[in-house]
Structures are given as C-alpha cells and as structure tokens.
Amino acid sequence: MKTPRLASATISSTVAPARRASRALRAAVLGTALLFGTAAAEPPASPIRFNQQGFAVGEPVTVSLAFPRTVSWSLRDERGRVVASGKATPRPDAGAGDSVATVRIAAALPAGRYALTAGGVTSRPITITSRPFQPLFRDAMSFFYQQRAGTPILARYVQRPDLARVAGHPGERASCFAGTDMLGLAWPACDRRVDVSGGWYDAGDRGKYVVNAGLSVWTLLNAYERAQAHGTPDLMRDGVLALPEAGNGVPDLLDEARYEIAWMLRMQLPDGTHTAVLAPGRKATRTIDAGGLVHHKLGDIHWAKLPLRVEDDHDVRALYPPSTAATLNFAAVTAQAARIWRTIDPQFAATCLVAAKRAYAAALRHPDLIADDRFTGSGAYGDEQVADEFFWAASELAITTGDRDVIARVSGSALGRSGAGGTIGWADTGPLGAISMLTVPSHIPAATIATQRRAVIARADRLLADAAQQGYRFPATPGAMQWGSNGDVLSRAIILGTAYDLTRRGAYRTGVVDALDYVLGRNPLDRSYVTGYGARPMRNPHHRFWAHQLDPAFPSPPPGVLSGGPNNVAMTDPVATTMKGTCRPLTCWSDEAQAFTQNEVAINWNAPLVWVAAFVDRTRNLRTSGGAAR
Ligand code: 9MR
Image 1 (tube, rainbow, N blue to C red):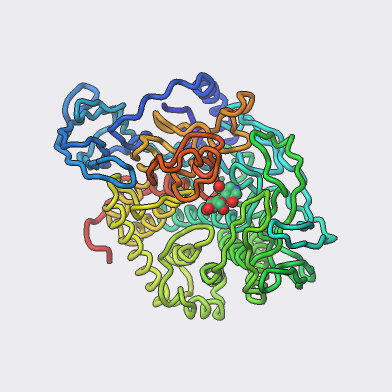
Image 2: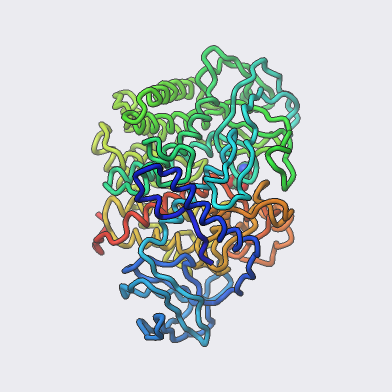
C-alpha cells in the first residue's frame, strides 16, 4: 500500500514552506484517511520477501526466497519481459524456522514495477523509484513531532486529521518521587516543583527519560552533522518537514531536536540543590549536593491503561533521582548541540555549553549514582556501567571545546585507547563518541581518532560477517532477538553507514540497505515493521493514543513508525506470554496493541530509522569501491 505522505513538493519550495506543507498535507490526508479508515484486507504472507517500499533506480534488488528446495526464478518488467533470472538454493535458517535463499539482482534497473516468479509463486509488485526513502525520512521525523508533550498536535502538520490532539501535560511541573519504591525503600519528599514541560513522550507510554532522549537526539543530530560533512544536506533544510517551526530559517530536523533538548535542560538540577539518592549498598537513601546533576526520568507513578487520551491522563508524575548515566548523556548531547547551534543561535549554544560543562563536572563528582529498576509506572533504563557514558561525554566536549584536559581524558580512557566500536543502545554509548569524532573535525589527536576509525571499521566488518550468517542477510548475530530488536538492527546500520562514509566501500552501504530491507519486509514474517509502508505494514502499535485496535474511537498510527520488533527474550506481555514455545527468534512478534514487548514504538527506534533513511537517500548513486576496507 502506498500511503500519501508529506508532499515532496515541499522540499523544493522556497516560500512559506510551512503553509505549503500544510496545504499539501491536507490534500494527502483525504486519501490516507480512506486507506486507513477502510482497513483494507491485508494480502497473505508470500514466500517471496523484499523491501516493500521498494528500491532505488540503478541499485541492486535483493529478494529472499523461502522455499524448501532449489527454485528457478525470473524477474519481469511491466511488459512481461524477463530482465533477470537464475536459480536459488536455500539453506535452513534456525532463527526463522524456514529455509531461505537470498538473491541479489545486480542489474541496474530503470524505474517501474516488476514481479518475481519462483517455485510457481509470483510476488507482489516490486517497485523501483528514484528516491524511495525520502518520504520515509519525513514520516519517520513526523513521529517525533507527534510525540511532543506540552503542545497541541495540529491537524495541519500531521498526515490525517484524526491524528491531531490537544496538548499533553501542558505546563507540567513535578516534584521528586516521595513514597515507597517496589523494593520497599522509602523516599523523602522534596520542596521543589520543577517545570518539566515539553519534550517527547518516550514511546507508547508518556514517560520522559533522559538517557533515551539523549540517545535519540544524538542520532538525529549525527544524521545532520554527517550530511553537512558530506556536502549533501538536502533533507536537512528548513521547510522539508511539516512542523510549526518550518520557515524559521533553521533546518527542521534541528527544530525538532531542539524541542527535546529544551526539555532536557529542565531536567538539570540548579546549583545548591540537595536531593535524595541511593546510598551505597542501595538499602537506604542519602542526601547529596546535586547541583549540575540530571534527573534520570520523569514519569507516572502507576502504569497507565490503554487506550488513554492525553486529556484523560491524570496520574501523578514524579521526578526520579539523578543518575550518573543521565548526567553524562545530557553532557554529551548538550555539548553536541553547542557546536551545531554556535552559528544558528549563539545564545542557545552558550546555554547548552554551560549546561554540558556543569553536568560533566557533576558526574566527575558523583560517578556512582546508578539508576536501577525499582519504581513502577515508568521504564527503568537502568545502567550499571558508565565508563562508556564518560567516554562519550568527554568526546563530545572535546570536539566542541578543544579543551586540553578533556582531550586528555578521552585519549587516556580505556575506550580511547582500545577504540569504541561496540553496540549502540541507551545503555551502550561508547560508539557515539567514536562516530562523532569521525564525523566532525576537532583537536583530538590524530592517533586517537585513528584508533576509533579502526574500531568502527572492525565492528562493521563483524556486522557484515554476522549478516552473511543470516539467511535473510541482515546485520544481527544469529540467535536471540531482544526487546527493540528492530531498533538494534538499524543501530548496527549506523555503524555500517559510518564505515561506508569513511571508506566508500560498497559492502558497507549494502549492509545498511540490508538492514532497511529487513525492517521493511525482507524478513520471515513478510512484514513491513514500519506503519503505512508496504503491502503488509504493522498497524497496531502498543501506544496509548494510536490505539484504534483497542477502541475504534482512537486513531490508527501515522505512517513512518517503527515497531520494536521480534523479541524471544522477554516474553512478558499478555500476547507474548501465549506465544512462548511457538515461535522462533525472528518470528516472536505479533501486530497486537497489547504486545508491549514486541510491538511498542519508541524514540530510540525511530531515530535510527531517520538516520538510515537519510543515509540511504544521501548516498544513492555514489561511486563506491569494492576494495579492502582500509
Ligand atoms: O527499550 C527498552 C528495552 O531495552 C528494555 O528491555 C525494556 C524493559 O526494561 O524497556 C524498553 O524501554 C521501554 C521503557 O522502559 C519505557 N517506555 C517504553 C520503552 C520501549 O518499550
């Protein structure tokens, strides 16, 4: 199903882009409403699986054929002419529980609709267009607008009128959590009420969590910084997105990111503030001078039911104790923002830099404030290891300020010496520092940067080796898939994309496209995990407002939202519980609103979708080399 989206006309407009965008949107809205309103019957799963959004002109077409035996295949164009053909021999894929052959069709095909026939089955149409992921970039960005708290979501900026809503938690103020936590520890009240309005709701819940906020903001800002560095920023301009800020002369992606950064700034404790944190041993609380530290999160004190409109969401919300991880994550992102806004809004940049330095200094004073899983009503985002956050924060500060002491901390740290080429996630932030160093010129010594380059490329090589082990050829170690696995796949694509930008080696870019192919349909469920994209998209996310499945008075999701994805590790929701023992790592997923371990949506999963869509679009038609990585 092809959904009308934020009109491509807006990208070339130079006058009144916001108004144009809204007109174009209104035109698009009717068609989309019809499509979603009638909930067109879904075609059955096919054994011929591919990216349901399609492929770019001139690029390879990759198709996975899930047949138990060798099959001959042929690809035909609209006039029925065979444009490619071959034979494919499957191999068993334990993660999927099927046998699959993945075929790469290298012929540089012109735009059009194609169909592949294999084993007596003809595929649904395979489309080739010039920029298939440009609309995905816009819709994936719109997710962040629609997650905004503290401001009404206006019909003129969203894809359908039923997605509009009143402001959630407007002008919100909150105080520290007071009462007994799930582990029986009593927390004292505090006399402060803090303005914590704005920002993005995290996911299907309405918590706001600094570590996940920071990871998501960094990811968007890195997409921006890379586009600047590579001289192809056309999706990163003002007027590209449908936003209230479009037309203000500032790139829309930055406006969206700033909405979240403005909230993050409110989460930092003023100098001289005393607050309760866990004492060593975690059996008691103690009060510390917490100036410069950052609250770990703001959230409801009970889990809210589904569905629930923002105007009916009245649970008490609390500020939770500061953590070292949140403080460092905050320092990293505000340092990154300080360099980006230096020329755009020097005052905001200065505010960010002061906040970053205060946070970093506070984290050095309090390196052991660990957030764990002890409060109900919101997610834990607990992280016991903060060496990676220290490295990341120091890296961003070093890039932005050139400060010699901070540079020495980066170079002298364990990750500075070994290279931070590992996993990206809300608890794994080392690679973010490495990638920033490899994106933005700085005074960090060349030897330190070279170490990070080697680590990122070595990691990318391992990801390619992992993908080769997968029947569906996407970057994941064969075996378990955990909560948010689709976000993990796309986060690995960020490493691969960075390696491509460093080397121009085509295999790395293919790895990124493979990751995108996987989430858009080349997977064992023949499922597009992105709403509104493809013939068999996810429709029923775990979300308190986009809850049409649970109550038809609530809207379906907008297009461009990524499902968490298969999860065979934590099968704890009401739907997953019934699936235990019946599914494989790659098939433990269902399109059910109550399946929060499989089908929630979240800012840290949509952010890499934005990054990857922007990357694949930016690097289309680039000359690549097939040679060695270094
Ligand atoms: O993405 C998080 C995942 O890595 C954890 O395993 C899971 C359980 O702690 O929580 C996920 O994050 C959720 C958060 O705690 C609350 N908002 C929704 C997030 C996505 O499910």
